[in-house]
Image (cartoon, rainbow over all chains, first blue to last red; front, side, top):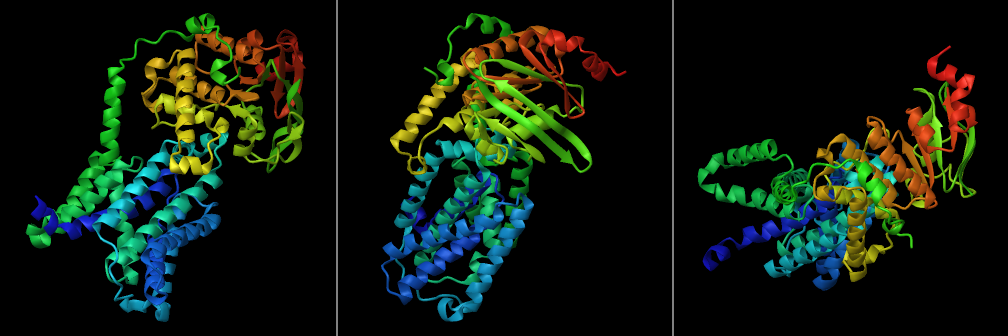
Amino acid sequence: MIDFLKANQPVFDFFLLTLGFAYSQQIVLRCGVFSLASAAFAALGAYCCAILVVNLGLPPLMAIPLGAVLGGAAGYLVSVPLARLRGVYQAIATLALVEVVVAITLYAEPLTGGAVGFNNIPKHVGTVEIALAVAVVIYLLHALSISRIGRGFDALRQDEYVAASLGVSSRGQHTLAFIVSGLIGGLFGGLQSMYAYSVEPHQYGFSFMVTTLAAIILGGRRSLLGPVIGSAVVILLPEISRPLAEYRMVVVGVVMVLVVLYTPQGLGDTFLSWLSHRRASKQAPPPAKPLAADARTTKSKGDTYGRA
Amino acid sequence: MVALELQDVRRHFGGVKAVDGVSFQVPAGKVTGLIGPNGSGKSTLVNLIAGVLGLTSGEVRLHGEAISTETADAVARRGVARTFQNIRLLPEASVLDNVMIGFYRLERSSLLASLLGLPSSRRETRELRERGRALLARFDMSAYEHVPAGGLAYGFQRRVEMMRAVASNPAVLLLDEPVAGMNDVEASALGGIFARLAEDGMAVLVIEHNTRFVAELCEEVHVLDSGRLIANDTPQEVMRDPAVVAAYLGT
């Protein structure tokens, strides 16, 4: 077992990094924003971290949080023009942002190394550090999802009209989601640059977006469990099916199509909603009484509206 | 006490004058009715008050303060709750979660407390869950706590929407055709709930088609036709008004 894990440690590390990026992608989807900007945030975090550590000699412990902050700041800036857009228009706009960031990293050669990439970064980060970061992110996202903010996000995703009628500000919540997405993306971008010895522009391009999005669609858009399952499938499946040589991408494709067809909510979310359905059916709703009965008998005033 | 006041409210869509110079008041502690035939501008008026649509001219005031330039969420945070003519629930969320989002306006946890999962935020969530359950019990919906709202029968969906609006403890409650598609027994039961909410000090505005329901419930009824108010009186007087009869039955 230990030998197996040791042999596959790079795969596991890559899974953890992908998981982080998937959370950055999920948080915006969760509040109804179709943003693909996570790739751009990750690139900013990665290059910021690499430049700070290699060129300016900052300790990684300072550089990585700064990379996250840069991602968060970029998230805020992006949210301002995107507040007026919805759905597929947001996707296109953020896609453009990703391409802009890739272009900048290509042309700012003195700083980023251009197309060759930023190489010779000392390795400061291993499995433990990445796993720690994932644990912290999961805790924070869990806290967020059971708070009023999480409830606001869920309402916005399902019906923006209703959310507004209850006082949820779509502008404020979307901005917040972009900032959180930027922070997480920047954080894991920074970790990746400190882990992988080098960073190159196309690493955070189209295929990055497809991978994180696939992880969310396979795993689920709502629960924290979703990205874990989704990232595991996206990363491990090509490894497991390695003996099939050229056909392994066929296997990956077929699995994806099957998952989308049969569990369109994603594996994680479907599993969790199956659990809660089971709980609901255990509750066995009695035949509904007409409302008239309790309207006349319940006399307690005020308590449920919070009036004394 | 006047909770909500409309003054010469107009909303034109191009050449169509959907709402054309409507003024009336909704007092706190009473159920006020607004009736009118199809296409008379009732729902437009609700959307104007709730801030979903902007006014062409005129003013809406809540407790004397103009709210007509504010966005829908800001109006909601000031204490104007509404239900929708076509029920709009959060279909994926359970009944309890649907009701809990109604408390959003009242929640006080700071951003930081929510993000870090501090005890204050967790305590608030726990308290709200208990209050949500109490509300469910009051509307006889406890058995459906964990059921996704999208899968409920029509009458239950109406109840959930009503609970959600009531949960926010609003100063003004706008009900857009709350008893559409309900039988008389259910309708009068809901009417009883509205009357009690008004007794507790809420200003309730019922927009309805069902004139009998409005007549039983309201002390004052406004009648809208082609975007204008054509009558304003007690339900009994209104139903005798020749202009109202003409609007409903045609001439």
